[in-house]
Length: 71
Ligand SMILES: [Zn+2]
Image (cartoon, rainbow, N blue to C red; front, side):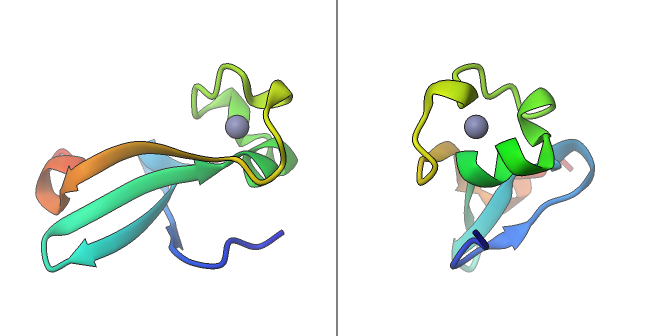
């Protein structure tokens, strides 16, 4: 399954996806289906990954763009 929206992140945020909401606002989330297939559940701290339905989307961060990426 390919996520219908959002951009895959890299580096410290490998396994997560982001979706800009407004100019400086961002949502970071992950898809459990994808994180299992790619083995990202090992790096994204998705503790209950193996028990969640494929379509689970976990929102992990909602905030200002600059804060989200930690500069
Ligand atoms: Zn997961």
